Length: 100
Image (cartoon, rainbow, N blue to C red):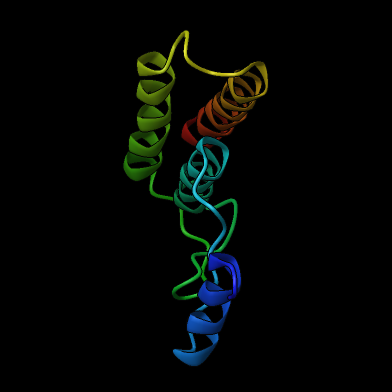
């Protein structure tokens, strides 16, 4: 009998889907970070390969991460807290530069 990871990989291969990483707090926060970076024009949008800055959407993504930090306070590991703190600092600095 195959384990569920192998079965998922086979299912993805059969339907031409890309296997996705396991959903963890870190992958979720990194996904929001990527979204903010796209909206800041720091990385190209994967849909059209263009870099465009939309400060309103960037601010929304940053605020979402900040809300997540607030709502999970006291429930994060040291590594998760450091990750979210680092990401928020980095995004906020990039936002300030873009909005100046």
